Length: 213
Image (cartoon, rainbow, N blue to C red; front, side, top):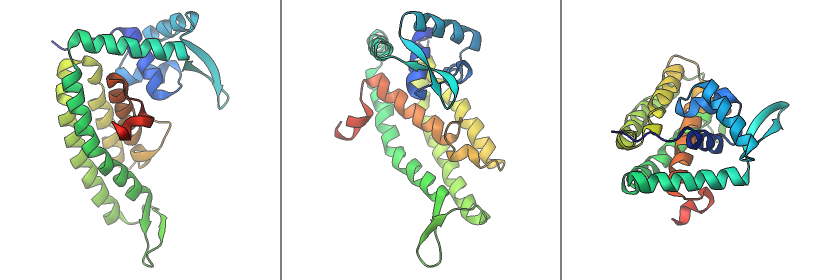
């Protein structure tokens, strides 16, 4: 049976992945109820594991160094209890094989070469060009689903990623183009970034030192 993580671990991890956030956005990462998330955040704030900060004029929760350290320790303990390192490491290694394709896909979506060889912003007026990129995204989505499957079988906190990827993919295929790369929303790229950070956090790898791992 897939291991269910402690709810506070999930909230602390979601805050780490988001950087900052309001209750609903933090709850959405791992599919927690908003009311439960709010209670946990209040307890964490009282314990100085997170604080409220103004971000673009809105009060949002941010992890404190104490909250980050304790959250990392909890992830390490969970990995030992579940004996999950080999599976998570394998998923991470496979993810790194796909990551360059995702980054290139997002670049191709945002800019393209014009007839003179210069790069210009993609205005999405060329439907054939965009369709080829979205075909690549559909293929990539099937591959990331395969990477997530053994993770979900072991740690249930990964089971919200497929539905988040699916929602973003369906939105962009339906013509809502922001759902591929737009930041500060649950776009495909945002969910991809959060999964990457989730794997790094789970393995205790700092993103800045990832290239040397």
